[in-house]
Length: 277
Image (cartoon, rainbow, N blue to C red; front, side, top):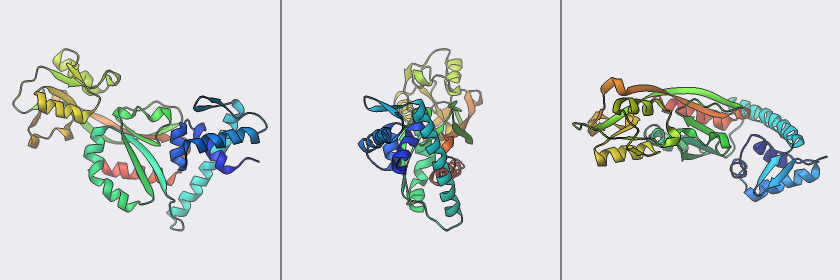
């Protein structure tokens, strides 16, 4: 007979999570996750997963079993959330991995993270700085904050705010060179504005918006970024004024099978509140 502890591991893999992410979600080791999947192979009527080096690939039968386990986990999550909402239950300790652009972390989240940790001691928030949430699709994170609307199968996508971005330089300078994001991040509107304004590709590319700001300070060049990183009080100005400014939507995304996960609901509401600062 299949064990629910083993099936929880299969549910994680069925969502597309890596073994590392599954181990973090279940607060166990990678070897334990792998061992539980191997045990399911032995307990099932036919093979559930095939091992490829350090990863497991689900068979068609495995996908069916994983989907059944996911649906059961959803119902458990819903029952747990209802109990907590009614004040009868309490959230069990959880580790949640969130990815977000460095500038959002620095300006919007860092000032309120200690308050969140004090208010929600059961949630260990593991935050990874990642440009434009590119790690969401590989299953290595639980939730992502993005500056581009993701197109990923079976993910909930919610707009949670807007930011203003553009091209900036030190006050009083006439920058002729500009710093953009790396080539994998060529599509955000701030990059298109930079090309239109300067009539050329970036003279330097950096994937981290906070590091672009440091380079702007050191070089006197212009750089793309969010207006909250370049306040006038710190000696910055917008290059080209309103013509090089735009509004960018901020999106939150997580797997649709986690919709009743109370920990994710709490973090979602926290993120919405933080972006209203």
